[in-house]
Image (cartoon, rainbow, N blue to C red; front, side, top):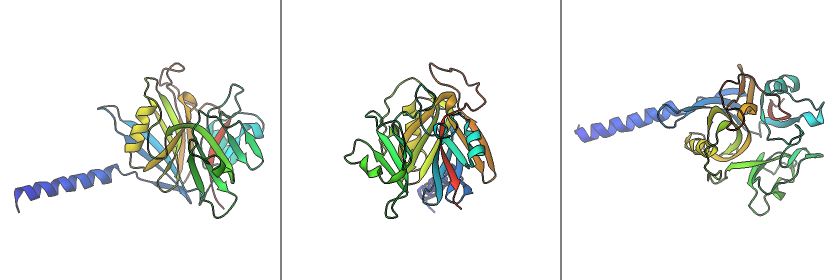
Length: 272
């Protein structure tokens, strides 16, 4: 066999092996949702760890839990799981100075609305459609005509700061500020991606790494940063209560080891 052909075969085999090695190893948590942990490569010695819960809203029940509609008492993501029967909980979004109200628009049920549509928050999604002919998840960029109206028939609709546009374009401006991050996104198969990265980095850098990861990321919204960023998983033999720490100008260290109480979460339950 010619030497050039042998070298080419070895290169192809090496590339295929690398692809397999870097593919996420998904662990089923329940019907329609699964968990993986993967590395986000950066500069030498600067790899970050990403935790991902991937959810098919047609099979798993996606919901919002709000302190404002219960006892007005904030809870950690882990406490939200244990007290409200959630398998997974992540920050639903940033909140106002009253410690409760959503910044941006939130419709947690057909009759329950909190906050208001903001012109500077350009990302939103809806789940739990009222009609069977609608997709289980609708993710929209709000600078598109009619995008807001397209969420009208969804019981749960959430607006937050946009990080990656639905066409895989990073819209967050480059900056030096960095933080631990909790984010929510969608992929090419219209599944929700619940994303958590404790390793602090600028948002635009994290966005570029997410697009390079084998997740088929399409759109991403920011839901919280720093020590308040949280992800809890208590299902399928996985028990994790993850918390962020570093945030430029707020808590510039990596010593936080406990989740902070938060007023609302995006949750996942297994359907009966």
